[in-house]
Amino acid sequence: MNRIAESELIINSRGAIYHLDLKPDEISSDIITVGDPDRVGEVSKYFDRIEVERSHREFVTHTGYIGAKRISVVSTGIGTDNIDIVFNELDALFNIDFNTRTVKGE
Image 1: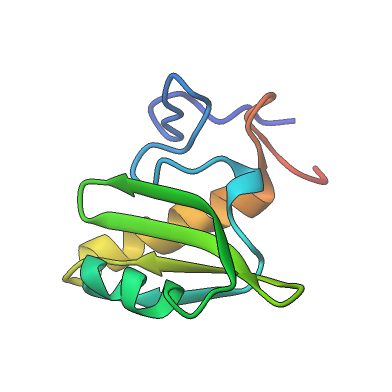
Image 2: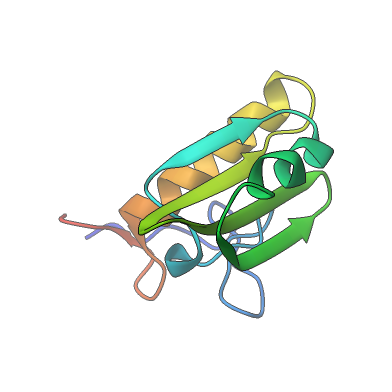
């Protein structure tokens, strides 16, 4: 097992990935991405309920439900650099064990 270095996977003091400030259980596998952080609320206002609201820098996430369907809305901010950060951190949320800092299934 190859352990991922702290400099390569930044986890904050609450155990969340740095830029998105999310823990793996705070994100749905069904995700809508929007650019502008203000659009997150414009989408999530149609949720029946919101269970997670996180904001760090230009990254805003709401996770909630429409009926029984759990869904997340995440802002990417502007530019390809920000989009890269969002998708890399989403990948880590699903595929990295934060406790061992290893790829799941390795």
